Amino acid sequence: DAKTTQPPSMDCAEGRAANLPCNHSTISGNEYVYWYRQIHSQGPQYIIHGLKNNETNEMASLIITEDRKSSTLILPHATLRDTAVYYCIVRVQETSGSRLTFGEGTQLTVNP
Amino acid sequence: EAQVTQNPRYLITVTGKKLTVTCSQNMNHEYMSWYRQDPGLGLRQIYYSMNVEVTDKGDVPEGYKVSRKEKRNFPLILESPSPNQTSLYFCASSRAGAKNIQYFGAGTRLSVL
Image 1 (cartoon, chains in turn yellow, red):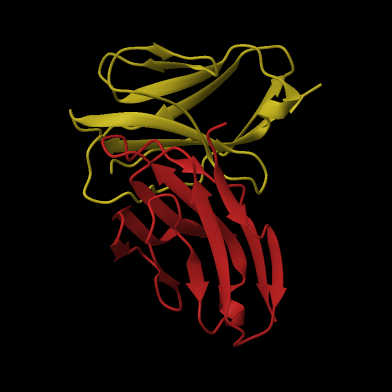
Image 2 (image 1 turned 90 degrees about the vertical axis):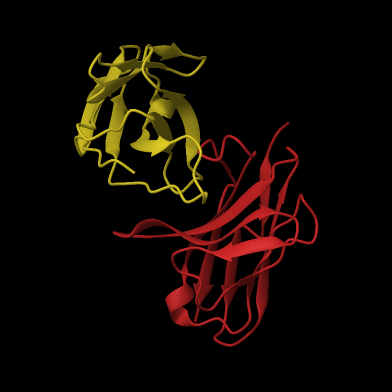
């Protein structure tokens, strides 16, 4: 799995967009970018993933730069319930095992 | 509702007393995993299963057993719990072809005294 770098913490005002960056400069051509989040002591929750095109679902948008060396997860209208640790994981889609490696992630705090 | 259900959510036990944490998923997923989460160490995989009767060790399997007799269930067994197994445990499942999209249970907080 390619190494990822995320800021340790970020703050966002409620109702504003939260933009969480992730650097993955050593990403390979067949590796996807996955985002998960973990609300305090709850099970991690899958958010979104992408290869090179921008992706959007009901939870978030994922913007991947053209060179694929970095990406941004966007929560368009952050709420207090979005306060969580957000993890960026880079991995090939088909692997022999199922172990996900969560790094330090970014602690996002949404303030009222 | 699609979900992964773990029981119990909280458990306090004593050293050496065998215990089982159950995990069940209703999504017909082939893959199931157990992780433990400890402060400063992140999530570490204990065991995983690629399908019924197929299990394999993860990164930290010592002191644990698993079984996969049915597709939906993947219990975690601690034959002789020790204090170093005090941790927060998560079960996860995913379908074949999308192993990186895992659905996690709510967690089991275990304390071994």
